[in-house]
Length: 296
Image 1 (cartoon, rainbow, N blue to C red):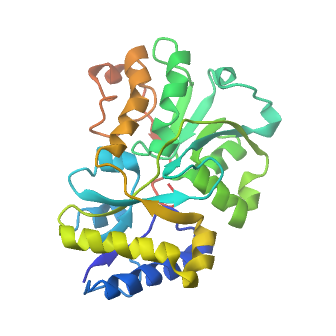
Image 2: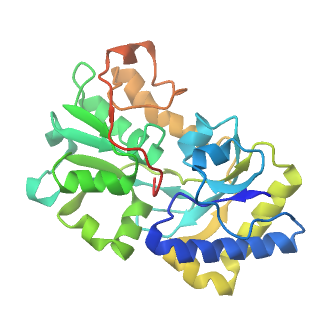
């Protein structure tokens, strides 16, 4: 049996919408002649393990995963067009979030404070912040500590309760929090947005045949136009897909260039990232607080 999962924005409160969207995609895949389709999404197997399985039919990943850690396991199917503020076409941004009561007016005022990121392999939570902080760093340091929370929602919680002072969070996650978890944003405010980058793509196994990849693209496109899925798409803030050039996600590597230029290796990086240069040996380790994968 093939595997399908859509883990990236799968809030528990939105699981019904995610399930409905998958049923719609499945319906259109069946019309395309794709067989052995799972009835439901597999939320039990960790998505990183799913990515390594040749039977993976559909998942979602960070563009950073596609570029580095999971590059040998995954191929991009399509890039969603999100309808949240800060998203344009197939691009999205991250929001740098601080506590309202701290009255922070600029990123430079956070020198010596505590940052929290969701994962080393996250563009939206870590890599997008890197070029903004690198020019401000002194001798490779800017923050007094950098924690890794495991997911964006936990990063927001850590800033809210004072365990960290700043987080970099996917704007789609912020939008969904406003929709289903508004209390998670109480006492927080947007400091600034990061530069735009290609949004987290829908992916399939690197071994999925080209004919099935083409069918997936047609099925996703049909699902984005299906009147029966209007409510699901609205809840998930997705409005369509785009087929980007094969090298589109290499743009994420350019966010690392200021770190290389300024010798800034304080923020964690994926195992194969060029930011993990020999100089990174001198950077303090990040502390993994917890390891989850929801709403990255």
